[in-house]
Length: 81
Image (cartoon, rainbow, N blue to C red):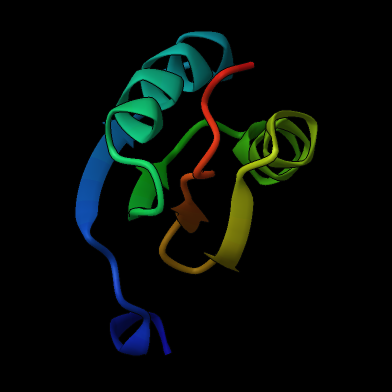
């Protein structure tokens, strides 16, 4: 199923901790409003942290594939806040 989901950009964050990961992810998403990013994260907290971060920041978690540690996140259009 992972291959059928469109991504404009892909980023392998490896085992980067979620604190730094979300700071870097924010920069990437903010640079491309409306784009879908496929993020691969091996951090054990990512399955809980990334969906929560998306809800808090107004970005959309399109899909999460636990088998490949991948998250598809759509960048919000309004980055004024």
